Image (cartoon, rainbow over all chains, first blue to last red; front, side, top):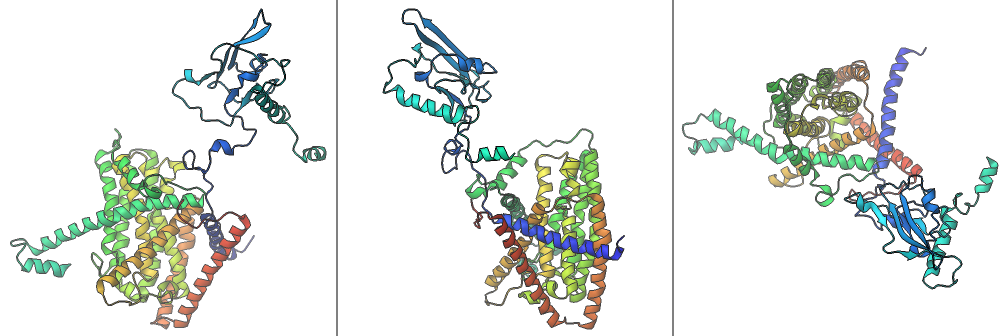
Length: 193
Length: 395
């Protein structure tokens, strides 16, 4: 058991020195640059442009390359995607009559964008979805019935080609279940573990 | 001011009115001008500056939308609170409940009567000024206890009782520390205490002897506790007592409590500056009395405001202590140390009635060495974090 007098003096010295040191720590914070992002109006560039590539924002559909395969509708765990697709008897082609995504229901899990064969349904960095009614939260992508995209068609359609290219790149980098191309060094870390 | 009033009475402006009444009305009018022109603004701006200071310490920006850099935030908050509904709980003692904020404000504003802003700018240079200030600031606890009791709410009552226990305890080290200065100067008058010091740090009582240096920190701690400031803000500990004695208050009465809390910061610093840091003393640079007084006022204000910022900084640094720790800090540590200082200063003054000049200068050097060591530690922590610096208070 320590001497009570030395304990008493030690308490006084400890109080003085620790408060001194604590004040020095907070003073060093006082002169640091604040890390606040003043969203939405005082940001140097739009927050959407600063988000990481794999950010799962509001869904979007490129109808030009949608095959009407319904894979995304089946994958959705909460049924927020509703697709109306019928087969035209004469031309043997899928006709899309409806493609609705209920943003109010969507939980941004990304399960729909993984099975999509062309990368048509994909996440955008957009996240500002606030609106005044639930009805307007439903995004309707089909304005009038259109023919679905067919992979075995004529290869070089100048309008569709860049969209398709973007979709395939998206699939490769984003929607693959493993997270696309592995980061360098990931294998070593795994084998080490 | 009295000479001016005497002149007016002699000129027959107040014929048939007893001169005592004229003096009383003049003092009330002057007090009103001081309150609305200075106290309210200082307390209000302090709330804004406090929020900005905390924000920067916590790597945030703080309020910056109302007016340029958010400088009008305190006005917006005040107007909002004034327009809110004032509720009196059905089970409360309505008279006391309504009276309590005014008692608190009275105790706070009365302290400004003996506040020496410059060599002539003082409402009344009472010959027991510092005793008067100690007495009237204790009136705040009456209001707080009144609020706690009248609310008829257990959280309020515990807050009020805690505040009373705290202020009663901490009055003792505070008074003993004040007495060390009274021993040196032999006067209780605020102006005479300041006049016994000089403008330079080596003429301040802070460095007079090792005892006064310790006294300064004891008084600082005790006044923090009396002003219910972190780390001694137990009466309004929101994690334990909702909001303590202000739990049931709303609207303008709530505003008064917070006006006092933030205004008190300035009072506390002003007491410390008067006793230890040379008050309004400035070098005699000009013979123009108006200019000189203005300079003295600015000096006093800047010194006091530095103390206010120090208290904000402490609030952002130290956590709130427990009730038992509060009491043991006071009775086991501060009171014995204050007694030692008191006796030590008495002996010191008996040996060297005019102060020991070499020790005085050595203490000043030591004080500045401590300050530079502090900046060295700040630089150490900054370098270790590698963070980006921003010295500008604007953002």
